[in-house]
Image 1: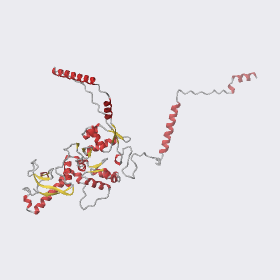
Image 2 (image 1 turned 120 degrees about the vertical axis):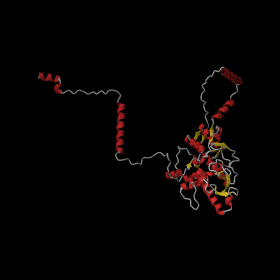
Image 3 (image 1 turned 90 degrees about the vertical axis):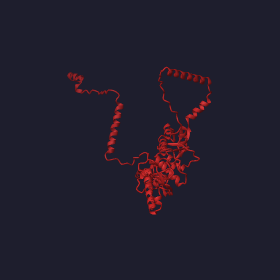
Image 4 (image 1 turned 180 degrees about the horizontal axis):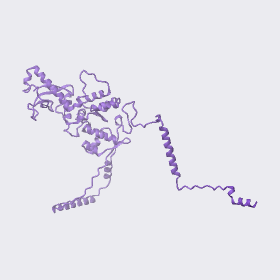
Length: 408
């Protein structure tokens, strides 16, 4: 058993470590140990079971300790394989936590099992620089609009393991009730659900739904990308990303803090309720539909196939929402820097005090004057040019003057 490969051990949903004696046997094997609550949700302890599998180790304390150490090594390997990016954020015992922004955010994410509300670290995020933001990305941490999380942990195995560890640490029954593998969202009874549990496994609760964090982040990014003047319109792809109906999408958006201010569907419904119902017309339409159905059946019997061109169904216009206000909910057009001391990213550039490069000013002035003269010439050029000048006649060339001299 001490020489067994890592693949011969598995962790069950009930928190038991199973050992399979045969290397290539697909069956999980027999239980030999169980996880128990430790000092941290991500640091459980291992307790050996007293059964036939461990009987040969129970009599000898030295062998028993060797087996426990071997299982601890396996558990660390299993954690690195399943939630490696999260396990890498652990601060080893006896090592003091650094005071830089990256270390503080990483410690918060580790304690939150991979997810922490952005509002809890907003002040720390303000101290980040472009260089330290790159360090945070290297740790696989993403700064979302409302949640800071590790996208790598959305895999089903990581979701199940975090659900097990959280439930174990918080004395909840096992197996943990996690969403089905790969599902993007699921309806949840919020009165009976623990929002911290669902957030810890990567499925935050919004509007009665447990929404996978990557899909939720995609919807949030779409909201702020298309927001204008503090308002945005819901989009059909948002409902597709969440795997829910339009009404379900509205509930999620309202749970985020956005306010619905106009819904075209409600306006149409009010108009239809106000209009009088014309029963004869409805009856005629029903009869026409029945006749058409009979014709189609007769055509099918005769072996005649007709192709009917179907027009694409137009998707209904969705509701307009007012954007939630707050630090993390500012429109991109407003532009906010990461730090309090920094200027907004989209502030107009002021080059009044910028010194021109030598010779650059004269060149630009010359180009400007040439352009101005060119434009002026174009405005005057309205036809062919005609030049007139008065002829100058010299006195000695005047014929009357010559006659006068001859008379003399």
